[in-house]
Image 1: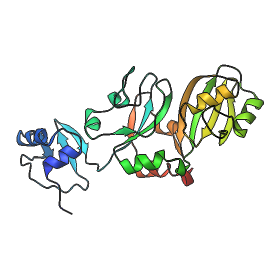
Image 2: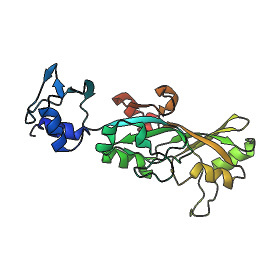
Image 3: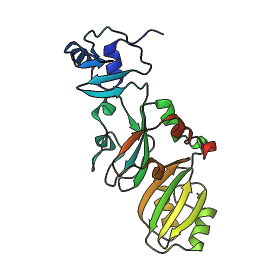
Image 4: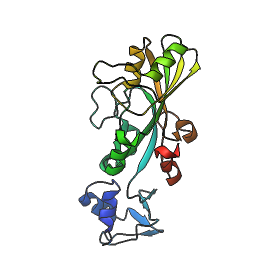
Length: 240
């Protein structure tokens, strides 16, 4: 496989158009191993490649896999309509390299959101055939009862679904706090299931995907991090 030229490497990492990347290189703004590289036709090895551009280091990544602690009033859309889009929380390079949310959280739902520019990964994580459990902490308007938990586990009928939807697991965390685990990922599913069971969701946070827990990532709202191989492995259902 032919090596990428430096301008194509920069373009792949989200630094702009190929023309702009060539200009960056020719202007002496790209440093590799302490040396300015001003020839855009150079073909550095991408393995363990670290670029310094405008005095900021960037590790070359063929694809990026990101976890973000989504705050409220942020839309999981590249073309938001009423609130800022989630890409406003990330460096501009991620927009250029077409990083997208893996699934969506409602604008008022907070918590763990995955993002990537790897289409195969996005499809695999979003596929209902994977049965990747997603864990939510739901604050309820009315106190949590054993009857409510039993109903959610047994399944509730939503008006546009052919069959009842049931929680994989469900347990009480507080008087008005419920942990609910789902595998389906239907539209507004937690909120609609609680409404169908006779309660109401007043706040919702996603706390885990598979075995990857938001708490373990130690991210404040609005913060993000790259996922390493060990964390990525936790997204496989069997790793939970």
